[in-house]
Length: 244
Image (tube, rainbow, N blue to C red; front, side, top):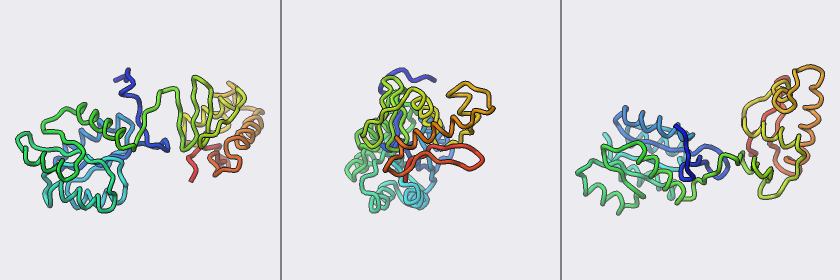
């Protein structure tokens, strides 16, 4: 599947990390399908099969949105929402309701639910409603495929503009290529050999010092007077991670 329109551009949290969604239903096959569709979007999914498990999972994962069945084995979706929102008042909720359960739909929205989907539903409909809800709530934003975001660091591959915390950072062409490679592989340790091959197209040999040199240049510009993002993994290479 290929995304071709702006409405389906990748969504992330404002800090560049994956959207977190909690899917709650006691039908394992349904949560499995929902999880698969949401993971395709690049989101992190946690599932729960009961109200008690849902409240516990929400406390542990702090989801950006919840897909919540109205009928659960221990207590209903309204009570689940009430308990979760006692700790996280703004988390958006989409209720899953039976096709003929008009009272459930009205009750869910009246009680503060943000949207509902009736069973049976298409996965595309749930994802579309989640995307719209995440945008409205401010939990996520879309970015074009040309913009890389890691934490508060942003790199536009088309305009070659780089910012950190909203401050412009001027890079040379080589520094830009090195940073782009690091940002395309966040949290992944990259060896000097990999960096040489990707940025300089060199076979690994006596050129490792050029990597160290340019990493030091980048640090002076990216990490200067800020929490560091570029880290040395002794004996392994370098890794770029969100600060904090």
